[in-house]
Length: 442
Image (cartoon, rainbow, N blue to C red):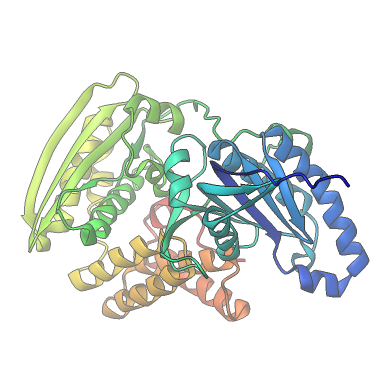
């Protein structure tokens, strides 16, 4: 009688990817045969992407798959490419009929039993897949630490998450820009490389990016204040018609990173970069700034500004005037005066606004809901606060984009109402100065 061969058992560190189809049971209920056929067709394409990125299919369970990669960078690039090809294939299909993957990625130690893999490393990936948005990617902190700066995607920090049957909380991150480029054709998606960064040509006029200011207060809770300062400086600079200003969403991808200013200039397509720090202690504030020529790395201007919280808008005006004076001395004086328009006279409303936009930028349902509450408080304190209306409209836009709306008809109407008020109150501001993107929700 032939003896049964012992099962190979061992351990290794690996990148684990868990994926399934969001709402698969509902799709099967609508069209069982068609859904199964569509999934098979999608799998032919996605399986080829997995092989291309060096991955291994461990097992499939109906609509779900478990994959193993020797490199977490390859795992994330593969996941981004899969979501890109799925977005392409879903074009033209009604929303309620689209097949959307949720993907979870973890880097961890795994137990090997033959061709199967087991253990907490696998379980964490499966739980992260469960909290990923349809069409989204969620990665653990262990994976994030290895890929940040190596793949050209942005991550939103989702904070510590308690995952089912996992002993301790896991810090999770959501991949933000996992859409394919508008110029990406379906035949090109297999060669899509998220880490590939290109240099952008400089615009004709003066151009600037304002990097996130460092929070020097020694209190992580004051991070919102430093980020809010930058947002307002971007807004003030954006009012100058002859000055091309990079939006917050792009410049904040460098937050928390050690950067080469010349590289930033090439990647964002700007001639100048403003960086600095904010120290807030009690009612006192110190803002430092330095303006750098991104082409040469030469410092053009540096200074610091001290004052009380009641002087905060004056301090911002001084920074703006110094920056503009250094890079565009021929700008008309009337534009300089117009840039000094205060967003609100209420410091309490302004604090609510800063806290709101800091939460909005985390891109989770809970933080977006809380941001709306804070921005509503700001509007209640100052009904003429244009930026608060615009930020609230942006929150609704995020809710729409991620599918978090409870009553889409009512919420879309409210978003457009807020956007119209913001435009009316801030009629002298350029649209990107108010929003960083379009406010209107459709």
